[in-house]
Length: 332
Image (cartoon, rainbow, N blue to C red):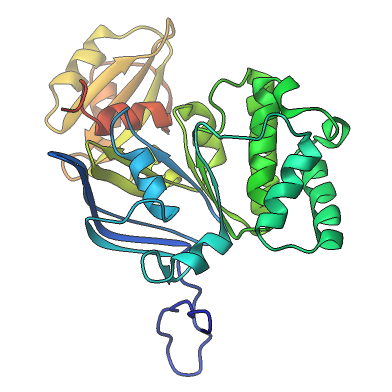
């Protein structure tokens, strides 16, 4: 039977059809007995992007990844991976993805090269093709010098590199990575992020779940935040961190401390929060954009006789946005 074709979005007459998203998740739900792990989750990921997938423990991240990798069937909803339906076209999906679970089972009695050769053969690659591909993948992951080492003799970081290399031997279009930096030392994490950037430059789409928010904030083009099975945010990471929503955050730098200005801003209608940064006379002011303009906020400070040095739009850290959007406690 001929392989099913991916479904492309409709295009205007005479225009090239736009590429479908690498991932298109619609109203996805899944349950374990009486506990709902996913509840009508909807998000999409553009092709050739690095997309972060973050949430507290028990939020539904691993369940989502297993569904995307065709290891679980959705209870409700529809999912397309690279244009293919994950249930009807699961074989086509599997040929095009590389899935790296948090705990990867490797054949520890094999050498690194033998392990990669085994998986390449499982994908039906010919011997001559396998050898060159494996050498390329080893070079990309900086494991060429360790290709004859037994997998069991490698450190945790090196085994993670082998796991990533295993995902790449069949040249997938999409990588699904579940906590790939777990247990790695800082240098190994930095090196892994550089490998992921290189893979993006090669045209890969990368969907990465991780708790290391600081690194995701600088690595990713877009992000999805999930909590208790529900999507809290999905979109460009720049929009999330710059506060392009109901509220906006500015940094107010003063020449000297001004408790009067801080109090006036705290009491102003539309200001939702003010915080002093470190020991310097710098305040982070968050306000509703539909209630106050930046000029009005600045005027409040000046009317309180504050000596303003700078008034600039602030950028949140991903960890701050994460805390704002997720609930405390363990999901039940």
